[in-house]
Length: 95
Image (tube, rainbow, N blue to C red; front, side):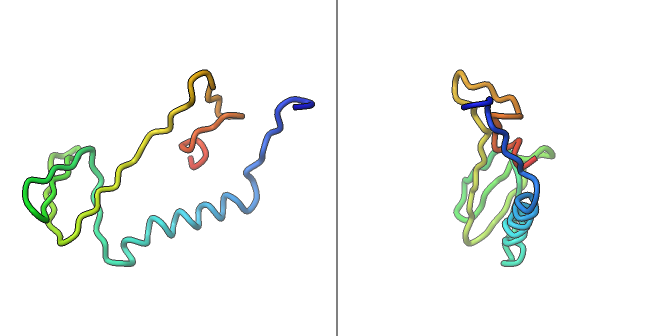
């Protein structure tokens, strides 16, 4: 690229729009009367019951429907250094 890599600015309306969308996603379950639990591991030994391992031990939840949503960690491709300036991960973008 002539003159070196081009930097893209994320200033302006984009961060506000992202924050607005994030608020919708985070609050949608509550608006629809859906409970949630964060944990590191989930187990199930009975129908409609799940155990969620958290820092303070295991909590058990019972419900007609249970959804387990897993998260991931960003992984850089081999040989591509993540520098936080030119090459970013999804975590850096939303931080």
